Length: 217
Image (cartoon, rainbow, N blue to C red; front, side, top):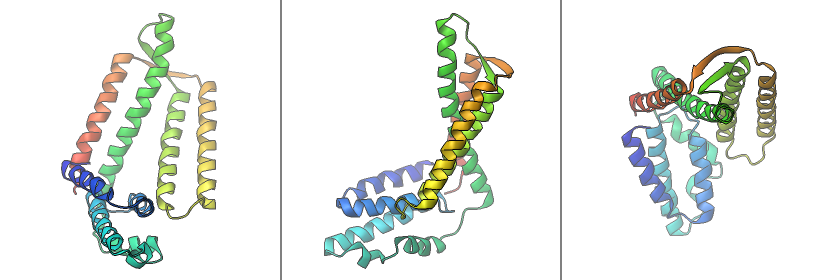
């Protein structure tokens, strides 16, 4: 997320506090839905700002949100989004790559902590092993987390939808199966010093920030 988008995000967060609790929940569902839209984060925040102003104006008049936005909030969002230019393929790739770097950095940091702690306790040194199970389990966790976030955002207006339950259940099952498999797939691919892994984590965070700034608004 570049500087201009962060500033607009902070502005929208402050603006949103003017809504009452009920209208705030409606806006939350709208914002969650916008996160899956094929437009830039800056465009999403512009839409969020405009909708928030509409809701605040309606709230001041004593109007219901159905009167302001219509009965179908998802259709309203789709109509607004259809009028915006979609992200280019390059921007989508850069954004996805930046998110992937962030997820991998977080996952690697957690993995390093769990791998390093027992090594230090038994004085086995600062070298950690990367196994087949680690790679497969990590890939499964990243894929599962991405799918769950996408599905929750996509169906934010549908409470307890059956498709959401099926996806979350199956994804968690896949994640659990890969984590269990990681205990049995102990084939060591290679060993790395913990400092090398730490440098790699920092590089992933740095690449994430660089790609965030590179994606056009």
